[in-house]
Length: 331
Ligand code: SD4
Image (cartoon, rainbow, N blue to C red; front, side, top):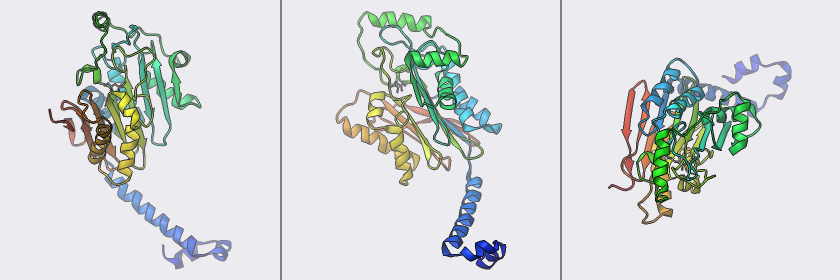
C-alpha cells in the first residue's frame, strides 16, 4: 500500500499517530498476504505413514480429497490399523505385555499445537480416538492406565477384549523362554505414525501402537509422548517415529526432526540427522531399528531408518506409493 493511499484511508485520529512503524506494519501485512497467496498455491495435500499401511493412507486420502481436515485424516487413518486384528502391533490384536495384557499407547496433535495422549490403556479398541477426546474434552494432555480407560468409558467407548487368540497363543509360546528380544523389522516394530496436510495447508499427526511385544507391565514407549513419537508444528512440518521407543525418547526424536527442518533442512535431511544422532549415542550397536518420517509445509516428505527394511507410504495427487527408506546400516 502506498503511503499516500494509506493516509487517505486512515481516520483523522490515526493520521495524528501516523509514524514509520505503522507504515512498516502495513507493508508487513501486504507481505504476509502475499506469502499466504503464494503458500495457498503451493498447498499439496498429502498423507504419509510409517510402514506399508496402505489402507491407512487410503482412508486418510479419502478424507483429504473430500476437503476434510488433516486432523480427521490422521485419526481415521490410524483407526484403520487399530481395528485390524491381523496387525499385531497396533490396537485390537496387538501383542500383550509379559503378563498377557494388551496395553495401548497413542497420541494426536493438531495444527494449533493442541495434543492429547493415552498411555498404557487396556480394553479400548481405538486409543487414538480417546487421545483426541483427551485433547478436546479435558484440560490435560495425557491420561494413563486405569484413568485413561475410565475416561474412555465416560466418553462412550466400549469395553473390548484386545487379546486375539493368535496373540494369546504366541504369548504362551513366548512364556516358555520369556526371552525379551525385540526382532528387527518383524511385526514387533510396526507402530503407525501418520501425518497429513489438508487443502487449507494445515498439518496434523497421530501415532498409535501396542508397544513392544512382551514388554514389562506398565512400560510406555515413545509413541504417545509428544515430541518423541510425534511432533507437529504447523509453521514448519511434522515428524513421527517407529521402532525401539526408548531410543526415540532419549533424543526427543520427532521434535528434533521438526527443529532441524526449522533450521532449513529438508524432511529427508532432518530424518537422516535424527537417526545419526541416535547412532552417535549407540556406537557399534546394530541390533535395533528406528524409522523416522517427516513432512514440511510444502508437502515434501522424507524417511530414514537404521536397518534396511523400513518403508513409508504416501498418498497425494501424485499417487499412492510405498517408499523404501534408505538406511544408516546397509545390511
Ligand atoms: C514403542 N515405538 O513402543 C514403539 C514400538 C514400535 O513399531 O514402533 N513398534 O517403542
